[in-house]
Length: 143
Image 1 (tube, rainbow, N blue to C red):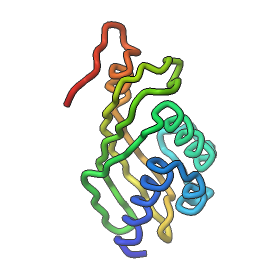
Image 2: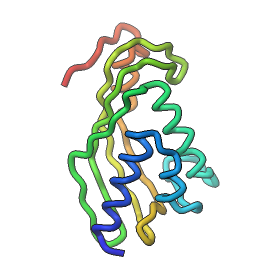
Image 3: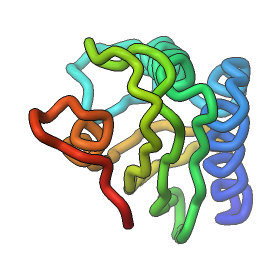
């Protein structure tokens, strides 16, 4: 598959699933056998991803990922993004605060025939928890 098709698949996953809540995009754009390398072995990644999207969109109904940089070579796609939203629903035991969040992410995807096969990702969870006040004495962070 071409680099352009792989990049388009990665971009569609972010736009359709995360930004628009279209869980059908997971079935269309992720292999059933896909692996999230940050999750325990044998995790059903498509089901896990649908739960993660639902959880994030419940906690942050205006969830939006902005992709800043995207690079691809061969079957690999890498991108840097920022996740923003307003904490209006429960998140990891934290009641809604109404606080705005802005969290940086890095994703590395291996694509097969234009679909996600492997994912490695990092996101600034401590910054998110601080922004929603889950860390005692924390205040919203401004970039």
